[in-house]
Length: 301
Image 1 (cartoon, rainbow, N blue to C red):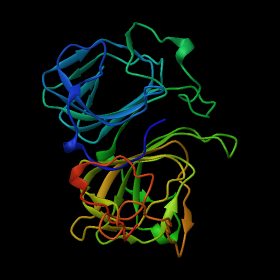
Image 2 (image 1 turned 180 degrees about the vertical axis):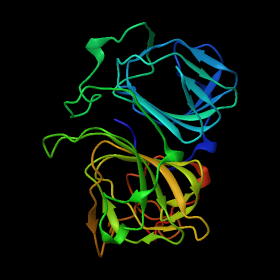
Image 3 (image 1 turned 45 degrees about the vertical axis):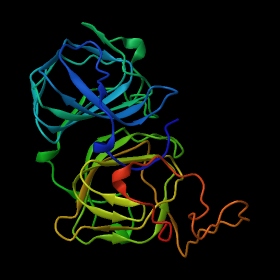
């Protein structure tokens, strides 16, 4: 499974040759998070040259979100804010990417494998794209710059001012305990805050696109990323006063908030060979974190 990442700034991470099998050209990749068991990953890609690839199919459910530049897939032109998703085994058209283009690429249930092909590999096409839906997998394309912000349908009244743009929502499963993936944009308006302690029954990850937000475990600025496995508690938040903050979010099911009020974190134990007053608090289970996010706010967690 993927490690808990809270928080990292993508600019702190090393560049690696991009995992874009089957293409020609040069691209580099930063690993935001990586599942070494099944190859699932969330990555930031920059194309150092023009990059081209024939049509074919991925071994993993695959999503692209364009941050900067230009991507062409078949006859479709993608600019900043555009998104596409293809389930594993579904053939996508040939692609061409301009030099200097930056994208986020997300994979689920598979590694970087890609096969050049004139046809789908039908035995790989899962129902609903490897999620719980019984709908057949299909290519999803949308342009977030042409979408209107909508009210937050996943939160209660205390978070009603959050705004969403849903890029992909796997058709609702029939059973409540089954999951369907959701990819969306979220925007917290200037001065928005939530001081509750919250956790969810699904994983949650996000990459910051604009603005900033203060958080008890660091500061969200453009390029800041987190990945939280299900049931990890988190909060509080205060968005910037000038423009708020926005993210691209991914979840492997509906966003349900389980709220804890009057929360306390108490760690007890006997110090053996150190002074806890000068050598920091006793704490366990710290997630992966990068240097730009600053020191831990252990008093505010």
